[in-house]
Every structure is written in structure tokens, then in C-alpha cells.
Image (cartoon, rainbow, N blue to C red; front, top):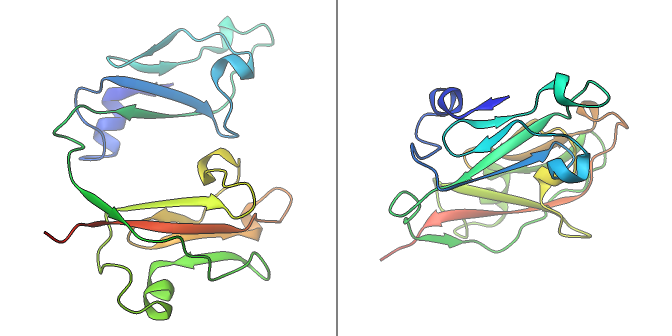
Length: 168
């Protein structure tokens, strides 16, 4: 159950109040259809609801949702950096932190990025579709995948880029 009103309260300013579209995926990146779940609600008024009692096996997958917002909510001009991969998933994990990247690549990343994207270095799969758990994944800290947080104790290798305000 990913209720829009609850999500708006939990993530103030991160979701527009009147989204125009919704997308739901399992934590491993499957659509509800691919996962085989019967969905009660998936709309921009309520959010997303998968009920256990509607499923043949009595269980719903764990879902995450994202919303599309109309302009001007998303009208901010963003300038993306190049992709950075300063660490490999050896030792404790893959650490692509903002501070480390700013130190290593002086002047290439703005002081306060507004966005971050992370993808695997081999297949360019977005991090959110890998099914891995992340210790950090935000523009103020950067991206951290710790081995200890994974079921198989191994992180994939990721690269990141940051969305910065464009200089006018």
C-alpha cells in the first residue's frame, strides 16, 4: 500500500500534490504484471494498493512507486555531470560519496547537487531496479552500497552522476 497522501506527508516537497501519472515496480524492478500480482488501485488520486486477499498465493510483492508531475513542478533546468566511478565493490562495498568525488574531481561537481542517478557499470541498469539495498542514495551524501546490507553480501559496481543547477 503506497498511499499518495501518506507519501506526500513523509516526503514533503519531493512529490507534486497533483501527479499526472504513477508507476509501480517491485523492489527487484518488475512491473505488477510481470510479478503476477492483481492490483486493486494504481492511480494518481489514491496511489497504489496491492491486497494480499486478491492474490492467488495470498501475498503481494514489495512495491515502490514514482509519480510524474506536470510543469512547472519539474521545470527546473538541470545540468548533469559526467558519470563517476571512483570505487569498486571490494572491501565493505561501493562508495561513491559526494564529498569523495568532489575532492577527487575538483570543480567538476557543484557544491549542492539537487539530483543523483546511479547505474551499474556493466549493463547500465538503474540502481533502483537491481534489488540491492542502499545505505545512501541521495544528492547530498552520494551513493553507498554496503556488502553487509545485501543478502548475498556482494554489491554490484555502480557509477553516479549529479544534477546541478545550471549557471545562467
